[in-house]
Length: 430
Length: 83
Image: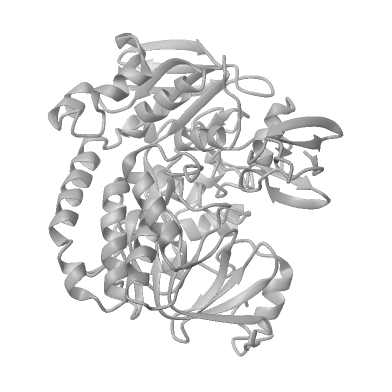
């Protein structure tokens, strides 16, 4: 392989995707139909993203099975365990840290399908072991964590709560309660069925009607060295529930770090795209959750549009606009339904940790007047997660806008960075 | 060719753990009965939060490599994991 400016191996492909969840997989399938060379980079051990994590061996439904089959059959080159540590939109290159060594990849077009992560809102005790995300606990169970006989409370907001509760129960967990912060009025206004709560899911969850609590939220997690119990607020009542796991998250947050770093403008929390999924930076496209939260159907249709458009097949892309419109309407209804109530954004107490990497408390952070000032004075957001967990939390707690993405986009081995600084872009780290 | 066994054996803090093939190191640490994956900068016990490689709470030492995200790495036969 040739060596580039950065002193590392150089690869190239006509179209490069970052992220092999539903959007990236669909983009790879459609882009490679054109005969262009396609490479898809993913930081997970296998494709499927979060929603289809571990689903390669046993797809959860016909839709997933279909897309895994198509993806297997397409000619895209797949590189798993790859983290993007730097990149440049002008020279159209990314610096990638693989599971072995680092390499540079050059592209004509880039499709970013970096997905979303869960939104965590700090509350007393949320740093205790066995307090996890909702999708977080499901991901851990999918990768082998046993939950048989464990008492679990699922809390937060969104359609994922019931789906994960059903999944955990199938794996032998005892679901003690599901606490949804939105109240019944909101849930019923848009139709619980419409929002991905089909009757079979209720059956799978096998809940006593009293176990699904709307207008309820966890106010504290308690335990000595790990979670032992939670405090739950339901209407005017407070309850204590003993449990082994608490799975709690308040919906999702788009992973905009890489697109922001490459110069793509945002619209609200997501990357701004046009009808062909083009970002504001030439040759860069975004699809799926990173371009707006909306679930797997939206990700699949947007991925296909981006894949066709990047390959110059605009007519095929346009044929999918109507289908995309429907998924956007669904996304809008979902956001309205699960709007966060002010109470869940005000659960942190003075000693509650907000930044888990640097152990910065709410009290210390509160005295700052911006994200930047908070970082400078407390090191909030400067640990290895680089503000990915506390940044969105701070935005909800203080209304701060989280800005300035710096190299490395992801914590990198020092070797990858040394080779970067020997390149013509020397100084970019300073 | 003999069939691949459907489990792998690793050690967690010196203790032998049998994990399902394909299981993450994070799962194996939990199977070993460890609830503290790392100590935070102020000494609090911590364990996985996000399960997808973002939060860095699941960091352990794997075969001498510190700060490895256990939720993103699959168990391999003979791995030595320390929390």
